[in-house]
Every structure is written in C-alpha cells, then in structure tokens.
Length: 366
Image 1 (cartoon, rainbow, N blue to C red):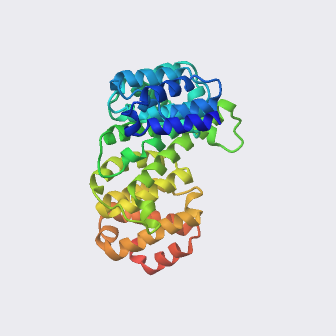
Image 2: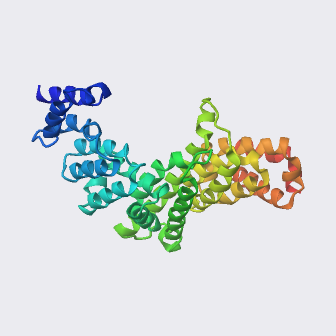
Image 3: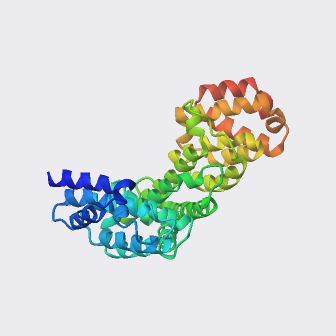
C-alpha cells in the first residue's frame, strides 16, 4: 500500500496542475521523504518524480541534487529511474551530469557491470551523449580510454557502439563525425591486436586466458561496430520491407566506408559479412569504390566464401554489376581485378551461382 500511495503522489507531482496547486508543498514533502525510505520499491516510485519535485530549482542545481540521490543509491532499479530523471537535464547541464558520472564510476564498476541492465544502459546512454555532443571532460576521456584499448574493454566498446548508432545514421546530426572517429579508434585497436602475433591464429596454438579474451574482444568489437553501422545505414530496414532510409547517404558513406574496411580487415566471417552487407547497400553511390572495398574485405581463402549467407549477399551484387556496370567490371583495370577476385573466390568455394556466372561471363577471365 505504501509504494502504491507514493506512486500515486509521484504521478500527481508530475502533473503541472498539481505542482501549481496549494497541495504541492505537502505532496513534495512526502515524496522527498520517500526518496530516502528503507524500502527500495517506495524509493523507486518516488524517484519517478525527482525532476518534478525540484522543478523550481535551476537546471544545474537540480542535476546536482538528483546526482546526490543517485550516488547514495545502491539498488540498481532505483538507480535506473534516477538516471532516467537525470537524462532530462543532461543537455542543459552537461558539466554537472559529467561530474556526477565521474563520481559514480569512481565508486567502482558496479554502475556498468551489467551493461544490458537498465542501470548500466542508462550510464552508457549518458556517457555516449556527453562524449559525442558536448564532449565533456570525464565522459570523453573515459570513452577514449576504453576505445584506445578496445579488445581489453570489449564490453564497454560494444555498448558505446550500440548507443552511438543514432548518431551514426544519416542525415548528419551533432556528434556524428566524433562518433565515427571514435569507432575508427576502436576498430584500429582491434585490428592491431588481432594481427599482433600471427602465431596466435595457428591451429594448436597454446594461448593464455588473457590472449583468448583479447582476441575474442577484438572480434566482438569489430563485429559490433560493423553491425551498428549496418543498422544505421537503413540497409536492414530496406531488406525487411520497412520504410527505406535512403536519404543523404553520400556523407554517411564517406564516414562509414573507412571504418567498415578496418572492421573487415580481420577477415573473420562475421565481421566481413556485416561490413560487406553495408558496402553492397551503399555501392550505387560510388560503384568503383564499393567494388574495391568489397574485394579487399573478402579473403581469397578462409571460410567466408563458403557460407551461403555470404553468397546470397555477393552473387546478386556481381550479377547487378554485370548488368548495370559492364564497363567497370570488363574494361576498368581495378574493377576487372576486383570482380575477378570475388567471382573466383566464391567459385573456388563451390558456390554454384558463382560457377554458373563464371561460365556465362567468361570474358571476365580473359
């Protein structure tokens, strides 16, 4: 009954007519007391009205006050609600929210231990916004540190990539170029770690737990970045017959291609596939650039070309090029080499459509 009652009072306080009524001081006093109740459910209900309760304070003071509540709260569910309340003032008081996050993360990793939980997700939403748009000191430095050594901080790097997706998407919005720069840092760190010691990839190589974790982290980060760019491009929506998002893609492609190329350079199938799908989608913007990038992404050996999903993405693309871009794939030196590489790779892997295409358009191999 108590938490239900506090929930009702919090709902009243969130309505302007009640905040401006004579009952406001009484309701606010009860809700304020409930924010420090011993019962976490009562605190969670009261937290829904934290902003409304402090509506008469200026934005910076309100953010600091909610931050105080957040720093004193250990229940993840109550924390999640307070983080949600803090978000409403983040754009207007970024420095204050940045300071709160610095204190929160300075208390330990509990705040981000469960990045998929409501509390951890709230922290990453705030960090991502602060690092990309107002570029506040703590958020920027923290994100830069994680991404510079992305394989060792794979979970944090993946979470950042996921929450940065909206900033990646066309048309450009504040933070877009910073987002791509930071993802390029993470992708480069992953590629560097992956290629550091070729012996680590030999069959039977004895690897320590730390080596395994970092190699897995490199793959997870590269795959996650490529996947988020794929979703941001609108390719997934178009494939699912949703409303197409083909708008202002030229600038998006300029930013996306370099990062996708780095992700694909691991030559790990899942990383290659996410990158290639996006490249194929963006190809009509610059067919020559896309063909070269896709050919570089697909290794001549390895398991990728033998995957049916890979063939389903690449072979229709090659067929379209032969129909619509014959000069590029039959007479342009770089285009012929790239096309030949792709067709030969899939034919060698036993892809029947590639074999048929090779026989049908034998001129490509002359």
